[in-house]
Image 1: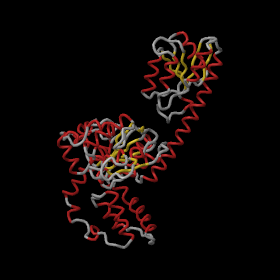
Image 2 (image 1 turned 120 degrees about the vertical axis):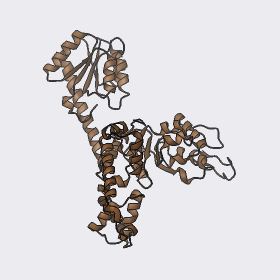
Image 3 (image 1 turned 135 degrees about the vertical axis):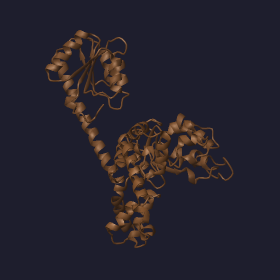
Image 4 (image 1 turned 90 degrees about the horizontal axis):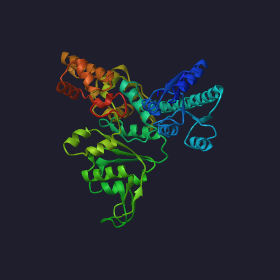
Length: 458
């Protein structure tokens, strides 16, 4: 449901298979200035809630054909944010009322009852719903404020990224972060962990920096004597990260044999250290990062497709710096302040000429390169590409046309949330031509995705 809706305006849902009961109850509630939506079957109400329809309080009869009131109540408890549920029970059915309260019912009304009794329960349920939604909004506001301080920038791609992070932070879904070298993938992973609710540690492993023969020991640990050189027991990072977040950078570098074992560990929630037969339970969220197209690697037999789908429950794309040039002055000044503090140098403000040069640079190294340039600037060192000046062809017709073409593609991708088919139709381009132009301008669909968890290939 939409959590921005005013709780007082949220409708009361009335679920009862008797049309006379639905009509009389809904008339009474509507006379009391409460919006009402009625359902003849519990399954229909459940499906509407699962689809995200707005509900303030759900009132349901217990005895109904199909999905009865108790079964509906239990099904609702599996939702992320279920509304308060009021059950209407038969006279003297105390065991059923106790069972309902234990299953999570907000209240129950015993037949026969005065309509005022139902209205009183509904209004108290609405007040509880109002407080729950206010608390949720407050938490999200605090989380978004923290993310804005860590992930600077107001370019559309960064605003979208922060929104996706705030949405995903409190879940335990595995996340695949895609971005170029130096774009800040580990910062994004840490934000997911720190804005979430996990009590365990954040553990990082660069898969590309570990020798292939040691990667399984690094992931799963080993017992003393498990192999030559194993002089003592070692706890693997999967075990160490249990209860928290495991960040796997350059996940595409994992050997295929290790991919198989990692997939099994994530599926089963269990590992065994090398040299041991004892099963160890692990409960962790995996945030994997890559600069490659893992599905393309899977098609080439270099990455397991089943592991990709296990890791990419949700996907986040980090826009490269060249796609958010409006953020460069803010970021450069931020890095300058950091460098001045670290190196105990007086702060310096870049002039317009320097900022113009920064805006024209292609930034192949992304944020890492920008941070390096800010440090050089604070230390009074020459910025090589700035000293040479802008290339002569900067203002040429070809350069301006290329910049205009890139801007059009960026705008269309952003407008359609990365939906390639919609971009093809709007710009009237063949798919092959669009792919070539996106590659030419360094544009990646992942940077424009409209929502975290969008299925691949949409």
